[in-house]
Length: 377
Image 1: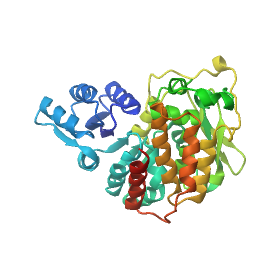
Image 2: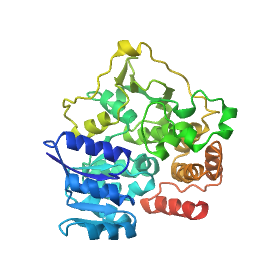
Image 3: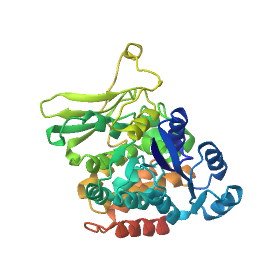
């Protein structure tokens, strides 16, 4: 039985992970759960899964929750609490499903202690991939990808060496606006952007899918996760979301991982790795699908993807600026403060005026994030 702590248990990935735990009570035990401020849902999760540790980022909400719970449950709060629950909850695997840069420090501290990570927080490797992977190698911590694309590549690499790979092929659905002309994107609303054709995800990642920044962040994440240069990472739009990603080897063969769009499968795989266990998930029937389509992304329309490639080619602290600016401007779009096309435009402006710090420390990465948020929010 694996003991699991979930950072972000009230979000989309966290809730699906808890469904998996509920369906497999003989396989998993919940040690810790966290949320930002949704203590109503967190309290229900606590009653269902009986964790020993909980953390709420919002201090006031944490104090309120503490009055409702048994004294046997340890309630932590804020970023320090998130770090503590990641390192002190005695878990076998830490599922990092929080959104944004808040996931960096808890993941970093857990990795240093050799705790295995089921990684659903892109920002950790986007902003500090070189540091995280170096620490993981040193401590023996396994970084197991939860994103469907990285999980697919991870599965396709099993039994093969990265030196035999010619390129990684990340597939993208194309998001909410695949068929929308670029001129029409000037007037789209947050409600329009949140109508993803294939996946049920949180708001931020759904907007990132619509701009294709999500795929750009995945390129950066794949660069560090699989230790391969960005020039060997290709993005292909695949509207059906059946092939979740591919690996092309030097002998010209291509291996793909396929399945219906269901995030529970990569979550289940990461939590059970290296075992493959039976599920009752719906099976793929290719005869019903009949055809699969593939398109090259339009980098003028999906400018965010081009910016992500540019940021990782420059390296050092540029991906930190890309990620932080995107996080801020996506929220401004959701709040109806800017237009959809403004997201990439303003991200590019932040990148243009950034003075790069070479080989940054975790402290310098956090400093850049904090300074940007103070200036732009």
